Length: 632
Image (cartoon, rainbow, N blue to C red; front, side, top):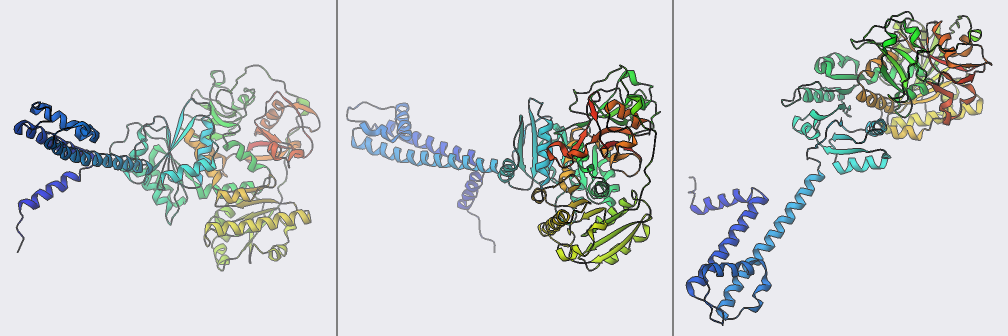
């Protein structure tokens, strides 16, 4: 049988609901209690005629005023006379003490609660034209640092980070890892990037660009795609397209990702990209430095420009039309980019040139005829490719893609030895071995961090060595520790035995990359930092994604460091205009050079000079290289 609900139960339920409404409701109740005390005291004095010893009659308003003063300040009753009056005022004062002390407690709790709420990072940011980073990983530090460098010339800029970590922890980590320069502010908020309600905190509708980081977990691509869906399908989203940059790890997810993102998202295919970078940089000493110079905001960057005087002119004529800028290719109106197009390609009215510049205000066009040292330009010649031997130490899911990428570059009859401490390594390699046309693949099982095992491999017979992380079978830190030990052994063996090979390794954690300090230009460590640099660049200019796609694609033009003897006569002073013209005649685009004598000097970028002043005189020596964009 259901119990009968009485008036006391209803009153208690009503009071509970009222009190649960928060600070304002509690203060309102205290105000009611205070008014009640004042009203009762004033009415009592007026009706009873109770007075002090002087006998002066006290009306209702005067009594209410006296009660109010004693409610607010207990010391006010110190001069009261008459025991009846004193007792009444004492009761009023006790009630006042209760009211004031409770009010102080409520206000203190409210302020403390507000501070806790602010600490949680749940308040909405009120920014305009800011950069938003969704997610939290080691990549955040590189991205924030690069964007701050890019914004140094702005009077005010803001980066908003929305991650699932504690706001204060994120802010403390950023202060510890980043040297703040310029006027860029970093604001952290706590929230889940796939929750539409949480995305409102970052004010995406007012953002200039949005970077979506890949989280850790079993299926990071799914989380990234869901985040993009939450952004683009929010009911209160802005009408104009967003500028979103997101990373995708698995190529198989690119189809659905493009359907979800449409034209609003620039997808960076991380796994495929790193495989291409490893394959390209392991074969050419100094290429890694070139890539870092292009992707780092601290040096020369890639810009787009057009000039009316070049419309209808061939691309080859535009190469020396800019005095301090190395032209790289063209960007068409449809968004496509072609680096090192045919030299006779006629520039259309809406075409833009892709070039390198220190800043967007450092692009200088000149219609004056430049001086070319014709006598120093050599006739076109070719270097006959020779078979190469590559050693891959370690293995993960990128290994197959790396071998396929290498197969696009090496000469026929090249050989690869895969050495890894995995039980099923032979079966994994066998699954794609037949698809390789220019390389033979051998497999050897062993502990790649063991010095004795490395010594029996015969390192002197290899041109290139690639150290892959065991990230499929180990934790990040264990995998990086194994890679680090292998690297230290290889460097020591190279020094002791005077071995010469290019060395490219893979690190998962950027902090471990810093521990494995690079010893020389052809000792390159690939990590998430490279991806972070690309994400930061594309967030500033979405058209750069097409440039990077063509730059790292084996189809079309790529960056090569070729012997200076193929283009000009070494040992003679010349300007870089002459080098550009010599490369043009061989259907290549020259963008810099490398001085062999500076190969060990980290302060001089290991001898790499990208986008040099074209009028400056330089004397090349035998063995120096010209950095060009060409198809082979």
